[in-house]
Image (tube, rainbow, N blue to C red; front, side, top):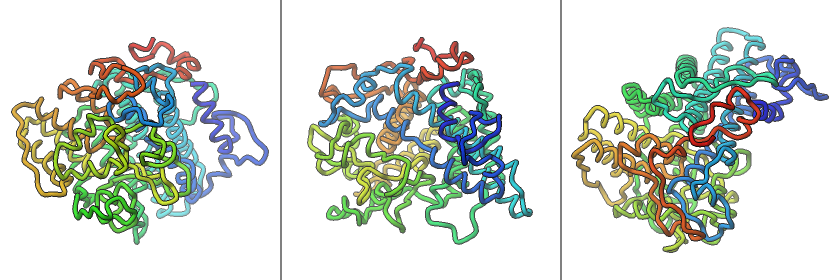
Length: 503
């Protein structure tokens, strides 16, 4: 833990001068924690300026696209990501370290806010409600961070006794070194955080801002509950919260119509689905999004298009990755599928299928909001729960709902499943198309690959630089990320807890 938290301390040196801080160093002009946290306004400022900036799934998106079957080597690739693309995954791999550090940085920031809340002066009952609502947002984000950590670093998130990650619910000292704990202990923290969030969150006073979905709301809480319970195998509660996320949000699946070929790829597109991915101004830019990370033209948070491009999201824009051929072929299976148009740039060629799911903005070619929860995912969760309940016709209805919404030429045929494996396979296939480049595919194959008889599905043409394996077994150890080498080296309490296969 030493190396990890020395980095976190550098990010937050200004936060405290007490010996309880991660580094006991006082810089000239540094704010003490008591001076930093005096009112609920201070808490709100810290939440916006020091917690939300560390909410990110960029690492999940980049790692998943590279390691599975979402990308091929692009025309401008000079060696970027080729080791990971060829299944070389080690404890020193960059994404393994970055994902771990990002989530624990977020957790540490939340813990600092929780501790800071004990120092403020609460004016009245209304102020206490506001304090609790700020903490509700923060704790919901901590729950999200832990859910993501377990999904990638625990060998089996459905097993409460399996090794999870480090449980950190306090501000660490410089010599804090924690072991990994059982999944059950992390589950308990996630549930406690979400329960607190659900009980204490309050919307701001009306009028509600149009961009409120870029902050934690009850929609975020419901969606996190739904994904968490799905991943951990509690299908009854996953179903309950997915239904709540759909019903209480009032959102519907974003339609594929109206479709106008003349303006589809323009900033003023009239197509609702394309408007959602282009972050178009209201009305319509939100679409079915339950929660997104704001990435305005000017500001922090990184440029998600830079995961695949050097310059712009077009053929001449320096694409070091393009869309994998088999994914592209699946998007072409159904005539009128709006995703084929929305996710592939029109400058593409047969050899280079240019990824356009994040088309950027005017004067910010690679920047788009990061969509973390959408209504479509909630329908997929309901579909999985229906398979477990052996309600295959219900599964078919959910999948048809999504396909109908994505068709610009009318309703599609109702699928028919003769077995649970057929249903699982169709769910995995449809998730591949709808959720590509959103950080899901790796976890989907880890969770459902065996049940669906689906695995990493690359085309031999995806690697123009070498001849490489096209897939790995669904039971391969690399479907769990390694604990980062920096953590193993700096933390003796975790040294003997590396995931299988990486020792």
